[in-house]
Image (spheres, rainbow, N blue to C red):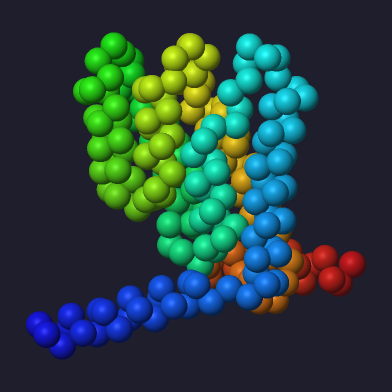
Length: 198
């Protein structure tokens, strides 16, 4: 028991240490990815949506950007977690709001707690998903009026934009590789080799 605890502590220290070893090049690519990911969503919101529909850029996307551009090796930052975590949490949040719309002290904790459990169950745990669920039950007006459309836009469409930008910016150099799944790496490398042959 004591041996396992020491090993776990040693591994945890290494992982935390490795995550904080970010050189200036990593900072540069993290900045660019986040700038273009959030910037693209903000651009679409400000130029293509009416003032009354201006809800395309939700706060939980900022937290997702920290993970998918700044901590790209984290299991919580992988595409399955990004998209699945947000979509599941949005579904939970909207459903809870439909059932318990006017009791905030009950709807807010129910939305977050159920979203965590469902993300764990589906192996899509993504911390900003909790915020996505909370936004669905606490935001008056526009988001509440969207109902289940909230799941498709802004949540799913915004996640896909963030993911697309992450796939581009996190794979521009040989030192960064996103996502960490070998299946994704094979797909990305096949496309890269195919483009080089042309």
